[in-house]
Length: 313
Image 1 (cartoon, helix red, strand yellow):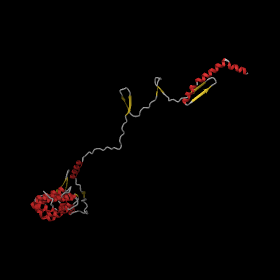
Image 2 (image 1 turned 45 degrees about the horizontal axis):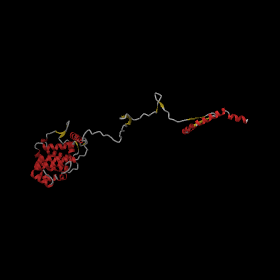
Image 3 (image 1 turned 180 degrees about the vertical axis):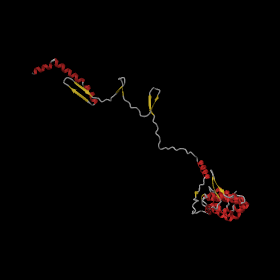
Image 4 (image 1 turned 90 degrees about the horizontal axis):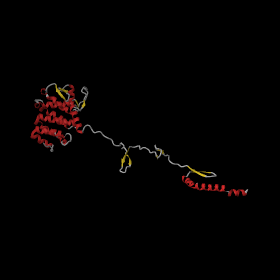
């Protein structure tokens, strides 16, 4: 048996099989190296040859329409893109982002009317309608500031309000020049202190028209001592509306009686000294003093400068 085995090893058939096995082993070495590089070798050995298979992980490619050159799938940009051409023929995609609206900024609409227009509108409104509080004329138990309200409710004032389309004015039942001023003019002077409508309009308008009526001087001069206290009280009022009503009544009385009022000027102008430079009533004070100066002559101007040193024509 040993001799037969030695003879078989030395035979040409055995030598050819050994040489084929050695060539197969030499050619399989690079495959082992490449498989080690891929980190996942799977080797299958047999008695005649050694073969290796490797599993590689490569990204999947999308075949183009011609089936030759693979192209990677690209995501479409979500924002709007524009391309800029460069001189070398290449194009670069630039992303243009739309600006977001700033919620912190608020837009204000322009005012439709200016301050001057608003003031003029307010002035026109006050001229058309009386802005005073409405009094309950039918309430006979209502307490009045002066005797004028009670006299008007009793029917002792021979005038009423005529509500026109634009302005309101008083309408006399009897002409003022035919009326007896005592005590009508005195009662209207007391009505300067009224603060409710219609007493304010009736008293101030009636006082003005009675002094402007023909023959008013002879009827008014004997009543000055009864009229002056009401005007003086109005000039000392802390209510601006009542104060201005007293200033206007003082000028109207001066226009009516003239120099007959000079004796009463020191008593009347004392409250005016502190309001000469007032922002809202300063002009009305100057007008009232100017009427006294103009109607009273040099004596009136001297008396005014004695009580109000800052006065000038």
